[in-house]
Image 1 (tube, helix red, strand yellow):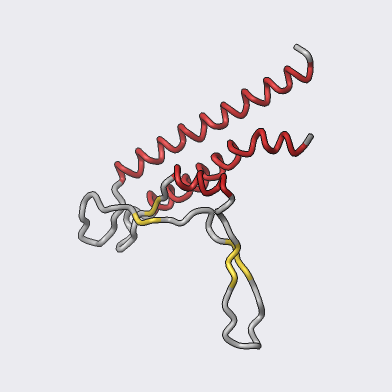
Image 2 (cartoon, rainbow, N blue to C red; image 1 turned 90 degrees about the horizontal axis):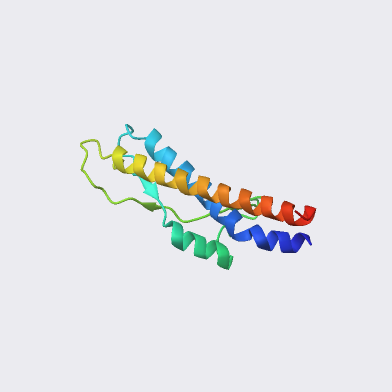
Length: 134
């Protein structure tokens, strides 16, 4: 039973996870709008979601040992590979953050995140209604 529930919500869970991560990336861009030489970053949500569904995201990183005295360790990769955003307006200090673009992307991403939550809420309510026989 649990696996069917997991399958029912798997797509939306992955989509919401990516939306939340993108919100963090966009917030970091906005927070560094006045940082000299900061380069705005983002990722293609559609291709990231396809990779997440196919199971090609967040593979663990293995660290290279250059000495036998090193302690073996591994780390987690970022959920997606971030790309640098193309510069829309050149800046004297080398910063590529365009606040209008960042605010627009942030707002758009927030709207899609809330829509995903609304969809999941509706699905849970319909499942509860079916279980209760109403």
